[in-house]
Length: 135
Image (cartoon, rainbow, N blue to C red; front, side, top):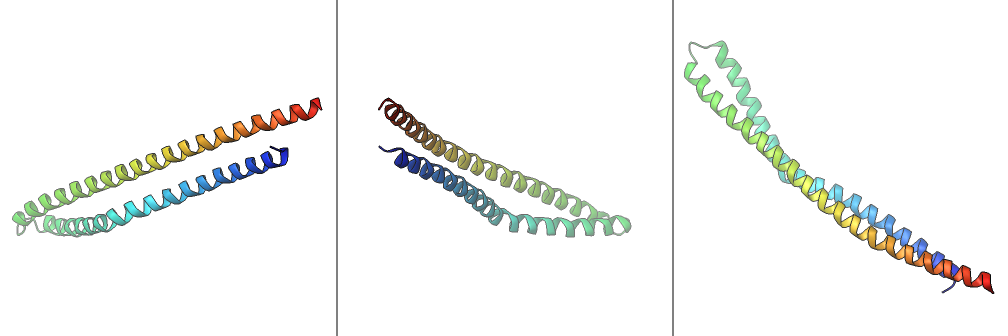
């Protein structure tokens, strides 16, 4: 194998690493979009409901005598909405984190293989240079 051919292969492998990094970057973005698409509407709906309920709660506190029973109901519902919101956010973060870890692991494994191939090609290149020096 010629030195130029090996250099070409090294460049191709480095290009492959760049492609793998770009692919991982795209997968990160895709995973983020997928998780946001899955959770953001639900989170926003719960947030809107929570904000609405909190507004009602403030009004009920101002008219405490008339609204004593309403205050109890709204306190319970806002607590539930807050809990739901917190749980959804935790699920979203957890799922995104899991997806990112999987993407990074896949990228690392692929890069390791390519780096091994580059190392082998560099060995072959050294051997060729060594043999050329002897001649």
